[in-house]
Amino acid sequence: MKTQKKRRRENKTDYSRRIKLLKGGVPRLVFRKSNRYLSAQYIESSEARDIIMTGMTSKNLKKYGWPEEFKGSLKSTPAAYLLGLAIGKKIIKEDLKTPIVDFGMIRSLKKNNVFAFLKGVLNAGVKIKCKEENFPSEDKIKGKNLKKDFSKTFEEIKSKIEK
Image 1 (cartoon, one colour):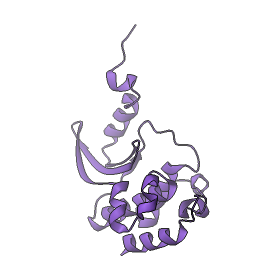
Image 2 (cartoon, one colour):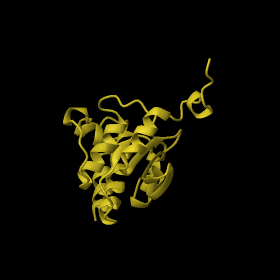
Image 3 (cartoon, one colour):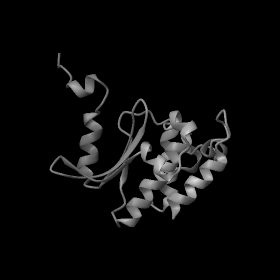
Image 4 (cartoon, helix red, strand yellow):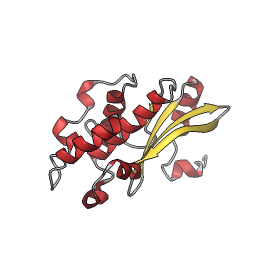
């Protein structure tokens, strides 16, 4: 019986998927979730060595005016969308090649944070193929489903990112 590699046992790396992504030779847009934050990185690989060209975490949204009362919701759907929008603007600004998306071991169910992030990247101007039916509703992206209505703050942060 073959022993699995440590990162596979810990559900951190799917090696067969990673090899397929690396063989493609296309840069990757990596999206990850931690216990408190979301992170996104634009990575180019050569000879199985990853070079991070640019990256952001949802903690960076505080610079754009994320309110202190919502600091515990930096993993929410609005945070995922705004992170995608910000990293997408960076990719366009730095004139980087169109990437493929790498969600790693995150389950990509319809209308969850993964697709909110992807919608933000698409709205920034990066051309990635995805079906429109997978994206969450506008109300959920703007944060109208949260305990306190986040939509006004969402629009302010979005306008700051788009400048």
